[in-house]
Length: 82
Image (tube, rainbow, N blue to C red):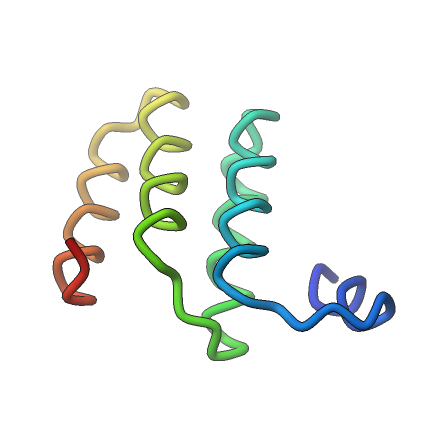
């Protein structure tokens, strides 16, 4: 759905858009939507950057799920980002 909307508006998805969407859903406390963004863009081959991972980690911390946030930290390390 997200990609379809971007395509309709002729916007090429990138890590900046990715991060903005994760932050937006985090502010709405929509953890499921933030996770959907992460999955959808990963499926499209858009690589998250540090800002994206940090936003996703914050979504989990603020939703009261520190274990999921720790999983995101491990993903950052696995991706070789600092």
